[in-house]
Image (tube, rainbow, N blue to C red; front, top):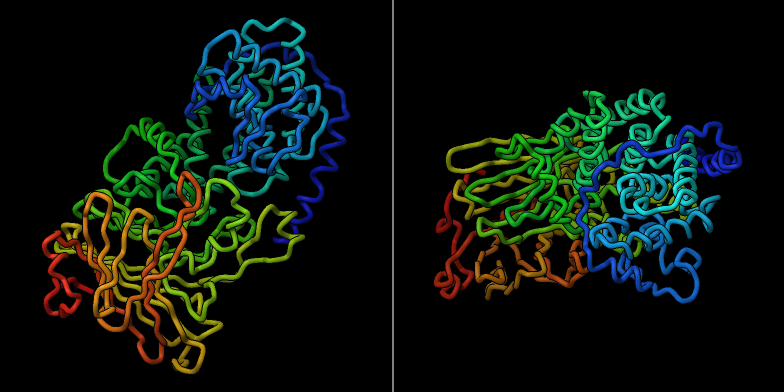
Length: 575
């Protein structure tokens, strides 16, 4: 499977270049019939920046000199991909002026002249599909007031790009990029005159992709929560495009939308942010709210996403989300993380306390190796290793666009009980069984009022082995959100956690010591931020169980706390 993916990536540029040399066989694409809406938020103030020659993408800024922006050296590949995807046209449209319309035409014309024949990044499937969708959705901006020669150049280039994409989309990176390429083809068949014969095959390709990639519970096969946001942003306008052309949207499209909407609520914390698992970065709050406005069903989110490999406990406004899944297929694991049994917790007062490090919005390659490793998650690490391995070959990473995840847990057992007094979740995984002979089991219980969370991490011998030796050292990690201030208790067996609004929680362990160490929160909208983590170290042979609790406390209780409370003084939850 991995070798087939490598060969596919090597082959597509060659076949693509040959296609670009072929003349167009039809001139019937003389107009656009409809333009799908763009659900992404637009900022009219950025139109002025672009007009003045200031292009800010992916955390980098390039200011034009006398050259075209498309002739300048990009500061990063991420920046170039955003520029060449033309998603920024929506900001020009938000300004609604003759100047911005003329500016958009000038920029599109520059691209056609400089890169419209070929460019290795501009014609890459992910960038190309984004540009096709952007040109279609912003056609009113670009073509209003346009003269006939530009209109023809625009359509000629658009049809040429679509033809190239039609023959190379199958070579796109598996996952969201592949789906977006198929969505771009379906949109073009519906929107461009003379493409009616393409609607049926494009719809069939879309059906196959959605049935393969959207799981029965609404999650994405890659297990990346952000993937369902990206796909939903494209599926909703596509559904409208089918209706505008008086074609019945395919059942697979409608089913995919119906399934993904509940999952948008599933991954949402009490503060409105998305859980940071398997490649998820900062939550695009505006986009999430836009998508939720299309959720006609509403209601409470799912609690058990079996197919996606996640569990959600919600009680009294407190929310715990845990990763209880195996690794996705190798070709879809380029963003997957080794975070099995990691969890995040947000309080009834809408404060995030326990998080995973997540992924940054920009410069992701600089942090990717660290972010995907098990220590970057609120779970257990054995012997400073991850519960899965990653391909480190530079050649494979360059060809596939990432490092596939290998190995990892083969068997993950999950049970839950919804009791009147608490919600109880038990899960175990064997990701460390083959190397260290250890199975990690985690049990968590969330009280009915959401103000008490109790957990146990237990370590069992695998396959009849015995615990012991020098290879059973563990670290139980609880990464804190950067807004949380942690203070170690005097006896070393816990910490007081204080949120910005003075909400206070007490973390404690039954045995052992709690260390407060440095960590980094990567998933902030402004980029990586320094934070802290609580860590409990031990040996599985000496201490095969770590019992811990997180309890909400009033200011008065916190002030009087010494950290010497006994377990008998704490509320009893059914672990």
